[in-house]
Image (cartoon, rainbow over all chains, first blue to last red; front, side, top):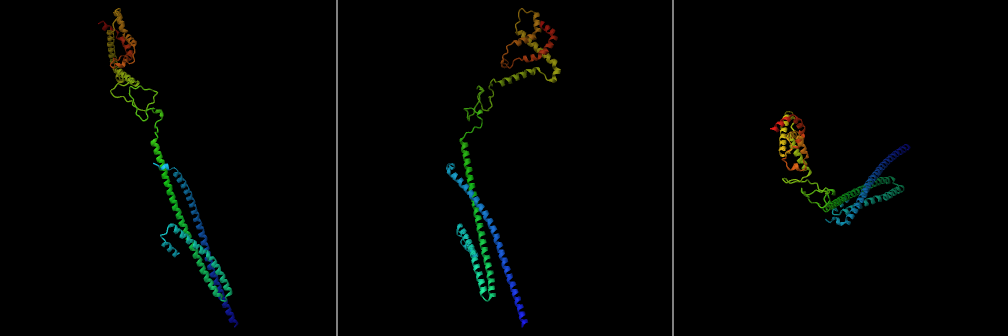
Length: 85
Length: 305
């Protein structure tokens, strides 16, 4: 009876260990995927920042050109006699 | 995502601003959903912990927890992907809008530039039409002849003070030219050339025909002397001896007489057919001086006869 009990205990321990190993494997899979998700987010942030910086620079240049155009148009409209042929 | 794309395709009649607004709205919604996942995951984790502690069937709770974790992770990844896609699409649209704006601004710049160049050209054209810009320095322009042609006539006296335009003088053919300095010089050269052509021989013939030319020249001299003696009335007091002496001294006397003649500046030019005596005599004086001594007896015999 003792031997049967010991055998059952060993089997239970073995099953427990196997379950533990499965759980650990599951946890490792989850953690790896989460890390992959984190890396994707970091990369996405870098690319988005660069795109936003270039867009900001283009907008600044465009704004300056528009200001210059506005001044030029105002000076030309101030003297309408220039266009009288 | 597919439903949203279908919605966008169906709303093709919408304006550009409305489409951009829809895109921005969808991005904002996706971002909001991603943000809402955090409290949901926190609440699910607390529930699983309490149920594992309180419930007796721990294995079942553990299996449910594993399934829920996998689903939560998949849901989170799905939401993050949606947000990233919408943000990238929005940025591309904004970049495209900025590029089109740049093109429009460039077009406006070109229009302004064309307008400026047109105004400048028009201004220059008007200035060219109105302004009379002298091409020559005023030093060379007459005061009253602005744009007029000035005709010069030979009778007009040329005032050196007057500043004349650069036009050549034109004398009409056949008409007597004004007696200018150049004209006088030209006639003098012609006359001298004619005179010297009789006396001066070519170097090739000079050696062989020197004697003959000298003889001919002497004969001409004799003729001229005879004419001069005939023309000039001899003094009654002069005898034959004196006449012979006169003959011998005829050359010198003739030359002296010729030298005593009044030298009018234009006499020679009035009669182009004048007998050219001076230049030849000057050149022949040396020769005649040599030959007079030898032919003195001949002259005596001819005079006597």
